[in-house]
Length: 319
Image (cartoon, rainbow, N blue to C red; front, side, top):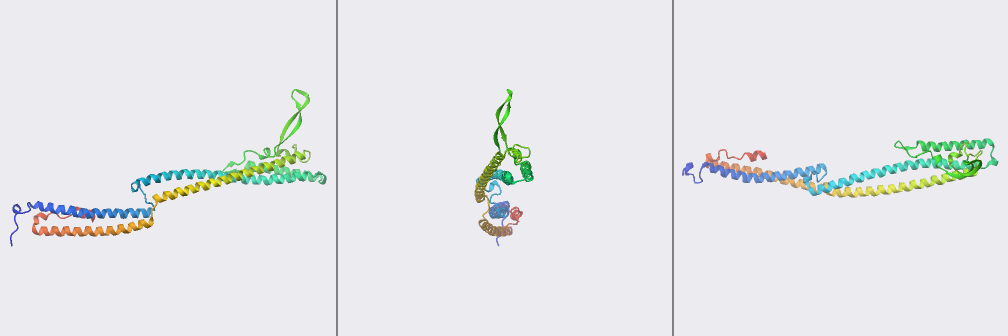
């Protein structure tokens, strides 16, 4: 057998050249397969994150353009939700006022019946007429009680006692002339439901029954118009709420198309990534085995060249 040449006579050159050759093989082969493994591992981690969070965009780097669109959609949704809350508050307030108005409407209608009953003076005794007036006083006090106490979120629904604003009628009376006390002038006096109470100008015992009936009719008509107005407001608020909810639904759907995970597609990506990850790991192991075999072969030919040239850093990084 021909003896191995000394380092100075080695055809390749110095023993360190063998180490350079092994190092290049190590870096070129192992780095390629290791980078492939790392890339597929990153794909698997990304798919698992998307499946866990339910979002395709978890950070701006996932989709910069999509992230901008999602931010804009979030701003629109925040504004629409605030608008929806405001409409709902107005609707609840209107509903509360409508409930109070309905209670007052029942009292006013009962009051009308009492005034009509009191007008039948020929068939009623003095005691019956007094009883009717007491009931009228009670109804008017009940109207004021409701209007003074009915509230929504600790805020009064009615601004004042309604007996002073319902059933407003006018009549002409004789009043002293401020310029000549010996004379009288015609003056317009404004009356309302409160005037129907005992001692008032429209009480059913000594007052003007015809004008009292007109006052009650005016109160019924006024309260009915208020109910119609509140009903129209309720319908408008319902339509506004429906329109806002429809807009929120559309924006949420558009945002979901961009941001949310497509589970079927992402599961497929996860399975594909896991298969490629396992295949690349097998390639890493095969490459390391080839480098070891090559290193052992060179070590058998030139022991000094292979010393310290075995792959280490890349193996540690993968293993």
